[in-house]
Image 1 (cartoon, rainbow, N blue to C red):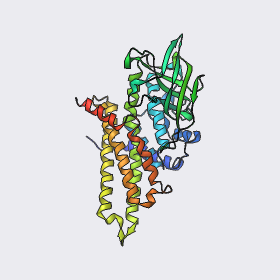
Image 2 (image 1 turned 120 degrees about the horizontal axis):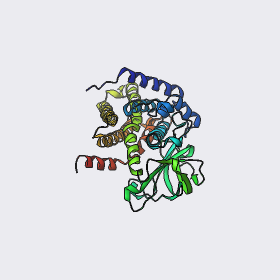
Image 3 (image 1 turned 90 degrees about the vertical axis):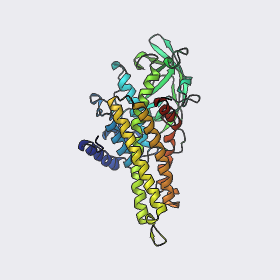
Image 4 (image 1 turned 45 degrees about the vertical axis):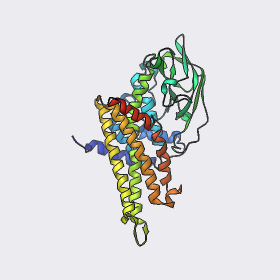
Length: 374
């Protein structure tokens, strides 16, 4: 058992971090297409996509390490989150389930084309079995009708990965996955939603009104949608939260530097046990979360039987650590941490939704309980 990175992994991490700091240290809110193309030049939009389609062909752990560097090098987590959602919730199912004639992978690895994930509905959040969006067969196509309530990347998206009920009598076997080109008639994307954080990632509602989707844009087989969604969530839960490891690395560096520089009552505040122990707890949470995430990614790469539980444990641990560390960072910086200029509060706002998306913490604990035999 080796807990150290291989030299090539360390080199790739360092090069990614340097590239992000040089080109994407302070991306726009929301991020622009030019910034997406910059992420593409750094290889970030195609980390785990096939080399023949412009990607790097990396496995889950190496993908996560690069996303970790991305999160560390960016001042906010919005663009790293957006790129990770594009890659893991959208490009991965396209990679693994799209037909060759669909041409859907073209441009995704380079950031020239952006993908959005549209699963959540007003009545189907944690309970994804309550989808109201339908797709009825019509000749050599499906006609989609319904509305998705929270689709990350939708305002910029060129293709929208979505899920609809094709057989209402079949339960979870009656859901089908689609990759819908944005320019098909009947696709309507709403205005960007106003959010607490992750401002670099634009999100919007998506409406399908009699949208005729040719068969070549069906992912997998009809009725396979639930399995495809869970497959994409396996990648997202294992890899995306590496962005938050990077965020916490940067945050801890800044907190330690502040505790050494800030003086009160004639001494550095890091010399007070109330501060030093809070920082020690931040480091402990970060390193525990990191080990769980690396293990989850390794198990995904190995096809390990425990990979579902490992990803759920990792997702819960990283997201809860990110929120707790964000609160501690604000407390240590005091009034300065509450101001928008230093960016300490931004890290906290970006962390809060991490316990909600990709399955809430409560859903992760349900998965863990099931996987241990309850």
